Image (cartoon, rainbow, N blue to C red):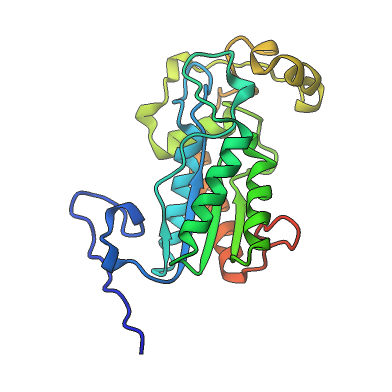
Length: 246
């Protein structure tokens, strides 16, 4: 009979019980591994550069809290952010490098984790996240991906993401610097975005209006994303083409 690894006691330093990085190797074995995938890119004059990684990590941790067999890997904080390179602080590794990193991470994790899920917090990482997941699945690995998305949310650094950060870490939000950016529908902005990046349509980097954002709204959004991810994990029906959890 296979001996189960001992459960790690709560971290007295305030860490999260589900975090892979805080464990020693005898405390790891089996279960599902969630890998938050974010970006380091501008989020307007009021939100931190690692906003996407923070949101993906928070949703993954909250989902993992319901199941002791689920672990959360340290987040991948660099992604494909070429559209934001008109702003200082943005660090993009591009789609080719991102795909290689995800595939190699998946191959490595699959040596000891029966299931793997990329929890994607940055829309600009598409379509690379599903493409990498599909490759892993073709190789016989039980991989999937899941997007941190809010139905009806604005595109970037607006009310949606500002509310999420106010719920997660209000001290990280520069409230006095929050201001509207380009508020036209994304479909209208896409031609200019594709031609010149975000800086071509909004000088402050915001696609939306962060005014009116608040922490209670952010908590509701986090709860909704967490519940959806938990449902996907429990159901485990990755899309046959892309590997997206449904």
